[in-house]
Length: 451
Image (cartoon, rainbow, N blue to C red):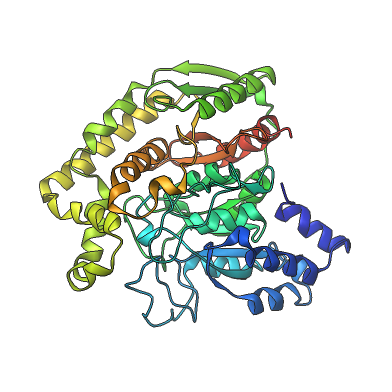
């Protein structure tokens, strides 16, 4: 795996690397075949100018390359959210809050990354702008075979590929049902979903006002901590707790259902290595997870809340939408007011029961996704592949979306070995456990990825 941001920043401060050298290396990757369809716009001048400013290495982000998902406003740039409908809208008048915080910390913006249209899928496919192929950051090669591209995961598809390939050190994205953690898992990088209220969503095109979370992908947990500190405008305290002092649970219900053999092998190996390193791990049924499907029977928050935002656009430009995305949004028109109110109430009660069940544990361990990245050819745009697409989409979203329903926080850590398709191990808990999850992840990372 390429150097992380913190290591590179220190090399700049020590004079072992030069800002222009690092910036140009990132641009070379961004413009290479590895990042085909990853970027909607590459802003080379911005990156070069920021990186070479006097004193840039002393800022937290040192002028190093950061990519921005096409969901976020950047002053002077159009925010299309992966769509054809918005690509001719006027440029943004000011930065989104998350972008402004990254800029103030010295980010060198390398460009806008492609995404699933309006962020409404976990697969990563976009019929308007093309889809980047998944990249394995562990081996710095395409995920799987060079001759058969795999889906990158979504909706932050380009952001993940930009980080995994080395074009960017941080990929700013969003997570409504797994849109950070899914592509992180499928590209062999780190994806941290903070508690939603930690980072303002102002200046980002919404999917679900209830579930949307602004967060980032990185190459290491150290970088994830730094990115979270900048985005949340707060400091993550350090911890000297040994791994053996953490009480960890493994959820048996739902999260491990229908795992493919590659995920099962990597996940079990990860748990074995953690136990050997002194981790206290207890299998628990966590049957409360079985209640999610009945709660979601009327569609869930995302269709209803996205339909409220898209209603007029769909009426005027519905033929320009990705049919798969339009289908999911339009389902929200069918939800009655009493069903939405009941969902809010049911979620509140479910969160209370989950918090009670998890209060004696520091974190829960699960596979980030129960399957590895599908072949792009099997889920590419086309009505004849819709059934396969929706089946895969549901599987990719199932585990991470449970944490969004919980209003929780989670991190996906790569746990595969060279020669395997990328697999993520998800470490999670309920709301406001962000610091403990990040502190624990710092301990787990070298055990899960000793290569």
